[in-house]
Image (cartoon, rainbow, N blue to C red):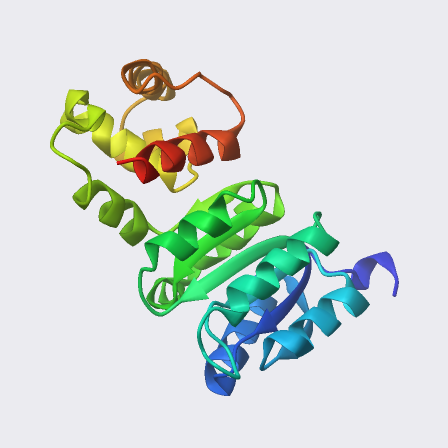
Length: 223
């Protein structure tokens, strides 16, 4: 394959037992410039594909045959152990906090999205790119779930309304520039909010984007 034929962004394998959804995902990925290197309907075939094709990204349904419990999550852990350079995006039909936190605690190049989120094509493509480049992606619904479950004496009560908005966007994996664009404020203003948030939550400031996400999620998990 010559340089002109090389995929613009990277290689992806897909795993979901819903054939229509899987084909739809494949079409979206190809339109976004990714090469779909293989598709699987169960975790066993997924692992075979990853071992054989060595993709840049694996998109995995959290629940797959035979039991439709957490086969996808287990497969994602195996992929991370065998191929740490492969990014992982796990899809779920609804928010599963414990499973999501377990996955996200694994480090960089990882994401968790609700299936309903992929209907927004641009956001889905942005999520793929972010994971491929080494970042983390967290579904906003998961962030909201964690906020809603916090205790009354939680240190989050120290945060202002704007700081909570910034924190939620941080937890989604957005950069300071990305947060600024979303909230219509300057990047410098966002940086001030981030420093304040990290100080109030007693979290060490870190310029590494995915470590900021993990720090926020670790704090929220301890609610």
